[in-house]
Length: 309
Image 1 (cartoon, rainbow, N blue to C red):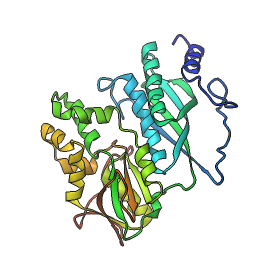
Image 2 (image 1 turned 90 degrees about the vertical axis):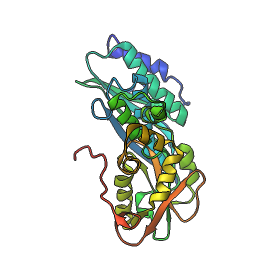
Image 3 (image 1 turned 180 degrees about the vertical axis):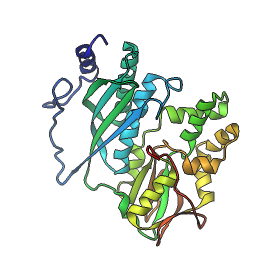
């Protein structure tokens, strides 16, 4: 864009649709009526995707950057069992960013927003040495599903392709050209939207978390919050991974499938505890008394992605 005013005008046109009485792009802040649902709670989250930390320019298009940055934030809303409603997006862009790049990021965010029925109503722009896309998403629910509700006797379920995104990133790092990694690369570039699974678990989940930092690390967070032990079953976990094609990608890359499933991040799958089966979810273990995380009865280290580790 020639200047900030031109960029704002472009975004106003792109995200022009809004409900009656809603204040969107162009004012200091977005404004909208509180949901009419009695007793509803607002769920609000924020996520940032930073160049050379979360992505590299040679790995994906700028439209993909916009899309995956939106999904990363919306996934937190899904994990709470909420319905996403509105979003804000902030772009910090380097000097070499072209108009076409800027528009591609915005259009990628719009594509993800439409897929989740969430409205982008504002944001901010600034200069930076590298590209940063920060997305805030708001949602509503009558009862947020927390990490702290798991009970001994619950089963542990997962919806989503565990390990696939991590294998896709490794394929991109090595520039691997093999049909068996195509789905993995696509899963990393454009993570699946998880709101259908969120709706399925919202009525019966006792606790939930989305897998952004790796199954082991995020399951451990859930166990800690609930003061229980999460006991994962290796065979069930690998069966769930094979259903997504992660096993073929692991073979093509010479990677250990279990390692990718446990410690790979950015799947944005949902891990849920419940006392009943959930449509679209696979059972991978149990909740028992105690603490920590085990695999077939053996304690495992909850390593995974850590921004400051």
